Amino acid sequence: MTQAARISIPLGPTSDRYRGPILLASGHRPFFLLAGLYATLAVPMWLLAWRGVLPLTSMWHGHEMVFGFAVAAIAGFLLAAVPKWTNSRPFQGARVAFLLTLWLLGRVAMWQPGIGPLDLLFLPVLAGMLGWEILRSRNRRNYGVPLILLALWGLDVLFHFGSPSLSLRVAAYVVISLIALIAGRIVPTFTRNALKLAGDPNHECHTPRWLDALAIPAVIAVAVTELILPMSDASGTAALVAALLLGLRMAGWRTWQTRRLPIVWILHVGYAFVPIGLALKGVADLGGPIGTFAALHALTAGAMGVMILAVASRAALGHAGLPLVVPPAVVVSYGLVILGAVLRVSASHPHAVTLAGVLWSLGYGVFSVVYWPILTQPRVDGQPG
Image (cartoon, rainbow, N blue to C red; front, side, top):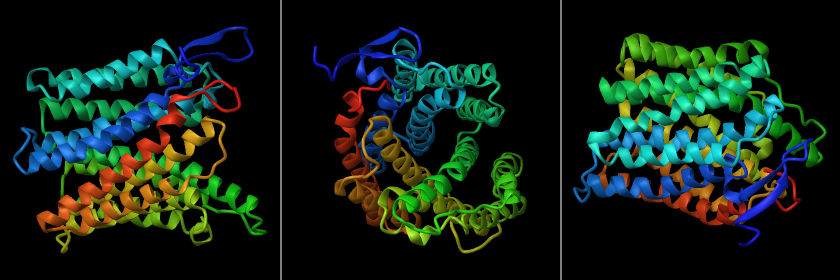
């Protein structure tokens, strides 16, 4: 068996070594790869269904965008991040394989109406694994992470046994709350580090503490209001307040100075879709000339699609021991996903919707091709992960 398929690496201070497939050496490897591949395939499948070729519904499309694609990427990020947050053993081997099996089972189940609820197995197991490590290490800063995953699971239950449409809208805002939480930590930090390395004498990024304190509760308030009073004046007002707070939050992140650093500016673009999408929702709910689906796609195709691509393309390089510089092809993938998202938000003609989907999925196709060897081969520095 080749080195790329199976390796033996140390796990930490003990003499234990991981001996198994490299794809299972860290949770980010299979889940980032599957998120990319699923984004590449699922959107064209939906476009075919939209044209009457495949027997898939709009609810399937929405569900798989959130609970298939986005949840896979979230799992990949957290399975790599939580061991670092908690100074615990990495998730690898059998545990990753078990989670991978549950996620794949959920995707198959969503093709078969009779066994669709099998999709519900993945999130509580993931939340339990991550939550145990977070609680055991008393990592109070991240106590909310497993709660967000359990909230997503509850909304998935609502999808299967209650109101699919309401479930998907609220679940999108819950995912956005997690994006806002993580982005608030990494975007200013990565920006500051990159500007410092670039020789910028004024490399600091600033976020007022009160904005950080209010940002996540504001997005959660949108989710709760949407659940209780969907598409109402109350939900619209909550969305506009959240949009204002999250927009102000990035005012000190020096976005313009990152324009020559693709691996950094893509994080800013992904985050920017969050306040934009929330503002569009606010206008739509308050009766303005914006469609509900335009706002929703700004948060899904836009914020989720761009931020997941930004984080996965950066984290995969870091965990591979490679320099944090994306190749030109990945910059192209950034542009394709951004263009696809913008077009989907603004599109009304069927041909424009089709083009948006093709561009967006093509961007993830490029990512999948470029990152396949990175995610399936050992780290270049011989370190675990």
